[in-house]
Length: 137
Image 1 (tube, rainbow, N blue to C red):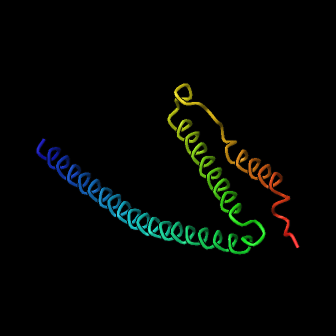
Image 2: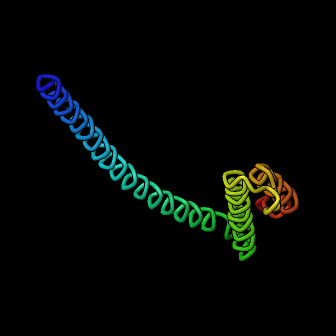
């Protein structure tokens, strides 16, 4: 009986050590994952910042190049384009949230066609102002 209790004690001690070893590996894996996620988030923040600057300088370039032919109308056109883009991304994000929350009855489902609507709106806008975009000589 004493031998059985001793074997049980040794077995439980080895089992506990194995459990601690597995727990230590899990904690190390989570720490490594956290480090990679922090690096990735920092890189994504820098990428978003650089994208903002690229959009800003691209917009300034478009305004500078078309100012003589369109004048102040180019500012209205760019405002409409960026507003349409922002609204379509907002509706797209809202539809994703509605799908991820599994409550379609609580959301007005605009579907994933918001980006398509944005491009259709841009094409209609460009066709409407096509005569303004032609450089007058």
